[in-house]
Image (tube, rainbow, N blue to C red; front, side, top):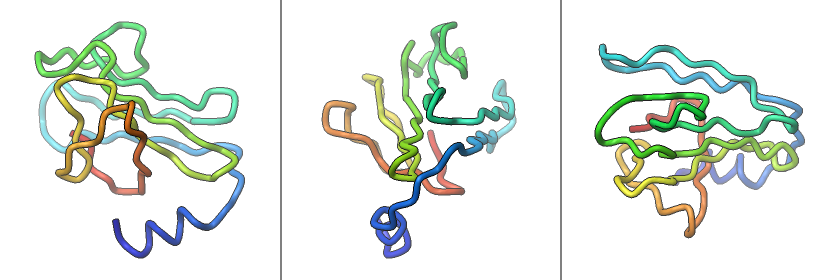
Length: 111
C-alpha cells in the first residue's frame, strides 16, 4: 500500500469502462492481451481452461487462476486469486479469493 493507492480507493468515481491491457514482460508463449471491461462485461479470467479470456498453458497455472474485475460504481479494478499455486502482485502473494480482492493500478506486475 502507498498513499496514492489509498487516495484513489477513497475517491469515489463511477467508470463506464476501462481498457485492461496485459503486456508480457518476458519472451515466451505470452502475447499482448487487451479487453475493454465494462458494467456489462466486468471480468477478465486468466487460466489454463479454454473458457478463460486469457488462456496460458503452463504447468504452474490453475484452470481458473485469477480474475480481474471492474467495479464500475467504485471506479476501481481488482484482482482475485482463484488458484492453489498462488498469484503474485508486484512480488507479493495475493490472499485467497475467500479473503478478498486486491486493488490494481496502472503498471502493476502480475505473476
